Length: 609
Image (cartoon, rainbow, N blue to C red):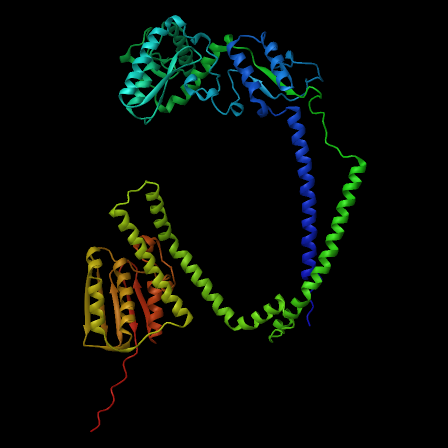
């Protein structure tokens, strides 16, 4: 008896696996405990600003509407009392601007965020503040609440309100809905719903963006001059800016007329938009508070001072328990493993000796031994058949089934009309499935040796005529001429139904790969039947593989041609079932010839004289 080396033993593998599982469980538990504790400590210290974005947004809004931080301490005190946090505001050089309470020095600590209304941290805001890109003209890094000289006085709102009312009326006439909202700079804006963004309603709403009040003329003109200087444009044109901070070209004159407005070319729009944003920051600098560092910490401890530690007694307890669990696992694994391996060794020895497996028990091992005895002879052939069949089905049925499911789901969701065209499409896919299933059934029967043929003397001319008539319509649809050339009246010994199937597969293959204007010829003489086409042909290196299942030589033999990829394989199997042969000859770009040779019928018995 051949003994398995210890390193390959099932007991060894079970032992190693169990030890690895225990170690992995211990490591995972320790990691989970440490990470959970660390996360809890981090949350308690408030070092993650995402836990309280309100602090950042509150101070950002204050900085956008005030030129200094003189009023910030009161806001910070109220917010810190509500959150039970220490909130500290410092200049960029770490000078304290406001502090909600005493605590350790933060001179070397990492700030939670930088408060700068002209350079907003979009990772904290999730994009433009309040989700309103119209406030910034696309400059998502400038807080929309920073309006500075671009604020519209209440006294000049009448003209804008009239244009907004006219725009609402226009929107409602086209069947859309809209409402007026006030922007931080005092301008009204229209929010439209229930319409296509490219429809006429969008044009109605956009009219308000091109109306400039008296108070906006001067700052917008200054913004255009600064952007023009930044962009380095020629003296012929300068940049103009609409109230929504969109840009256009205008003649270099003091007043801009409608006839002089030209759109900005897309090739230079990114550079010019950057210049407008830069100029806008320069103009807003005097109206907003300077950048400041924000710190949000636990009022009872300093920054980065908490550590997660274990006492000596706790460490000893964890090591002891872990060692006990590991030892118990090893002992149980060894005992169970030896008990499980004993009957398996007997089965292995019997299999190695190519003798029947001894059945010594009535448990699962005994049932396994009987099953092995019963299945040894059939295992290899059944396994090969199963793999081939599963591969064939999975490979070929996926596309039509996916098409049927997709169209049915589209019809179910009212995305496709349930009309005659859809039914015809589903019917075609179902026919393709039926054709593939029939082909696979024939191949499975041939593989299993259960394919039955009923040979009898058969007149070849009759078979070829029937095949030609059945394929006449598809040949005409493809623009292919279908002809018959039979010498004499040959007779072969064959199953006429199966012979028609073989010749039909070859004819269908020829029509499929013959371009319009070509021809397919069915010829026969004595015991030979040939199907010759003038199609695309087959390369010499591919010719030996054309009878393989699902194989195609190149892109021209793809599933778009309508074949299942099984026709030639079935034709060869059926021919071999008759005791004949099927061969192929081909010249690339000149066509192919498939030749069937079947045994001739036995001579008739001699007539007694």
